Length: 428
Image (tube, rainbow, N blue to C red; front, top):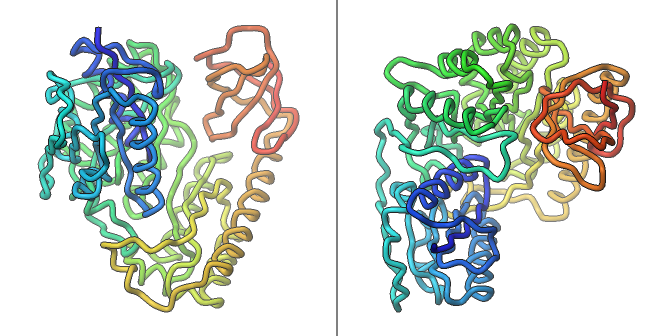
């Protein structure tokens, strides 16, 4: 039996796609082995969100070739979509597959014939059509599974290359989405994480994102449905209302802000202003007590002078948002912001990053404190040295000491203390 190893760089959507590619290869007769182990085929699913991400992709490919020079190397995904000529020059690469065709990879590797020139399967124009995925993801554990419902984005923010790398927004056939969800639950997964590039824009023959949630709610044996990152202008209040009364949809929303200053938001070509964002956060926090709220924040965007930065920082401080993903702006060729000026110098960007990151840590701890001595359900994932870790519905990471096997068990825990980014609890 031929062996295949797969490696994922980047987002949760990439993880979902790698899992489906793995299952397709398994169905083709490959044994799936851990990345870095000897393998006949190595698949690197790439990211291109920043130039640093591009560099990490090249490093991963070269490391694979050094550690296993006889393996057949297939480079797929976003970086493969954007940088065919660069990847082609890496000695040892055998196949390059762009985003339009990467889900069909298993059909392209019948013969693992290493030759001097890599085989390129690439379409510069990505389809706008609704799509199906005739497979189910193969994940490393059976706790949670990522479910891809959508791909691409038509918003085209000034700093983002993903609309180019993944193409326009398009949705997965509704029946196909629910079919995979049912199969994932049959495989033992208790939590499904809805993923895509811009999931709130989902629309399949009149079926909306809310309809996806409503249908997942009805699947027996599915314990939890979690929404990944969702754009503020795509959250219909009906979604928040449904979350408030749902028995399965996790009370957590990750809603990217990027900046709290309206001038910067306009320059970024975001679809919202600060007031609109504040209204959504206020509605969610009042409708769902205890909801976890996360966001993406960018510092050092071109033109973000001291005044704009202070506006953003003050805006964030006043919001009940407790989970920050802080990003330092970096130029990305092919985006509108690449040519924008004035640029913010590196020491200032580093200072701002530290300030916003520390604010996020303080707000997270404050959020945790309200749950001390409270009881919450935790879905446990893994055990290390007698300590089991898992997540609450509102995205608090919890550790408990237990000799029981808690893997993939949803258990009530009393939260007793805070330790770094986790809460310490005991089984009830």
